[in-house]
Length: 261
Image (cartoon, rainbow, N blue to C red):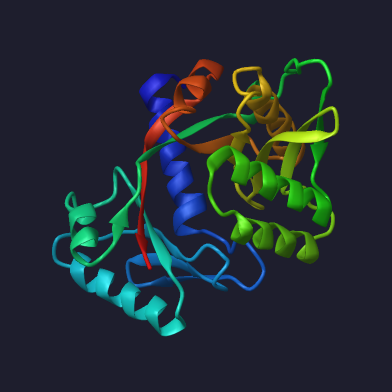
């Protein structure tokens, strides 16, 4: 299956498995379908938001109002995850008019896990470590805050929740240089689907451009393939998209977070 046909196939599969039939991504979260909207609701530190919608010009405004009521009643901020192929065409403008703020668009890409799982060279003195305990989570948070300049405390709580619920899981991988964590990336295995998700991929300044991103992609792809997932998917920032396309990832669509406090 080549080119555009592959992209269409993967996007249809992604929509069916990870959006319309989404499962909760952490303890204390639940996913439900409300009319033409699929949403996740959980604790304040969890990801709360709309995963899928099947709206048109007649139904969009009422659906937006219903989601605002739902999350306001629970006192949590939330995200409407809008994909480039979602309707109606002016849904983004309608969200902004309702008080949402758009963040930078990203590109949804996917690739076969086995094709990405080859060996990747690491610089001398660097090793990869799988995160399995609270200290590893602390190091992931530290790396993300240094790499992205953002508060990652909620991410840390989500990773700790996952480890507590399933002590055998590996939610993230660290690249460690002479004992110091310098890069971190997260892994989401979606049971019962063809996909695993690659998230994060933050590297501290001074270690960028040295192959750590590629090595973390390869390691997580190996884990995904070992768990029976055929594909890995990424929501890529503009800086990551060219790297992933050179590795063979196929662009499927765009995705833009619309946030409501």
